[in-house]
Amino acid sequence: MTTATTRESHRAQELRALAERAGRELEDASALDILRWAADTFGSRLCVTSSMEDAVVAHLASRALPGVDVLFLDTGYHFVETIGTRDAVEAVMDVNVITLTPELTVAEQDARYGPRLYERDPDLCCAMRKVKALEAGLASYDAWATGLRRDESYTRANTPVVGWDARREKVKISPIARWTQADVEAYVAEHGVLTNPLLQDGYASIGCAPCTRRIAEGEDARAGRWAGLGKTECGLHA
Ligand code: SF4
Image 1 (cartoon, rainbow, N blue to C red):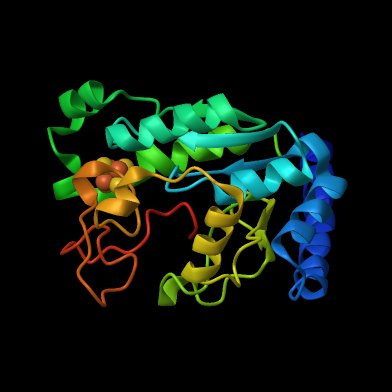
Image 2: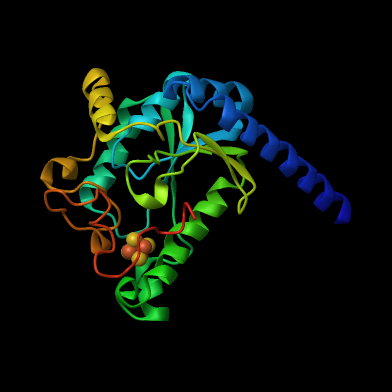
């Protein structure tokens, strides 16, 4: 037990040093080059997580590592358009979509905690339906790539292109951290990347249906998430 813990800890130290060095060296690299580095470094121990708002990072990752694992968290509360986007990505892109599900179904959660937990305690709901499910799904990887961008909100303004996820002891890669919304739109147009149809219907950031609304002109892209609840992040990126 002690030996295993020591070995894990040493591995974590190595990965942390690797992440910190790469974060400095790749700050000005292109998103594709960041993912090529990740593919060369981690191979099949790299995965991508996607909310299926769009498939930009999955597309970039598939160019660097064809057949890359793409993890999608099916909370049971998604818009039908989001599930449709997941199915389309699986059908047409060179990626391996893996759907993660929480321990409890929505019905089981309702029975145990009462209906509409997301209204009364969204932190607990997210912890069970997202954070815990992702942690289980990430167990077999050393590195995960996300679509976080610095311009999305003040909470994401310091996102490194490669950083250390101390909570999960994984390397966390945000290849489009430096991109703007215009950069995303240009990439989508150039490569014909799949996007969630709700982006054409007033939504700028898409999560679970009960906790997502359209945004008004001039609002922050994430203003439509947990509106009125004083919550800005689900805990996946804390
Ligand atoms: Fe629950 Fe809302 Fe979090 Fe989805 S976003 S897990 S419905 S609180």
